[in-house]
Length: 100
Image (cartoon, rainbow, N blue to C red; front, top):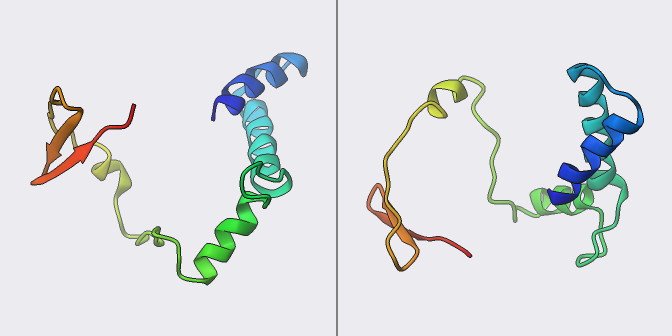
């Protein structure tokens, strides 16, 4: 993600991008490159190929969303939580540990 945060503004400036639609094209190209063309240093595979293989083998934890699902409503919910000194917080009866 850090690479994209650095790369996108540089490319927009380099190509004198002035609109969001033009910037979106740059973003799409960068994402496509990193997902489909670039070989990951640790896995020696391109991420999209690895992703598709995981789905094919039933190894992916993600599932397709129900098209009837109202994501705007879901992401509008706000719940107050407090992080404890040990780096954990509770949500709906489950305890989660934050990473550093």
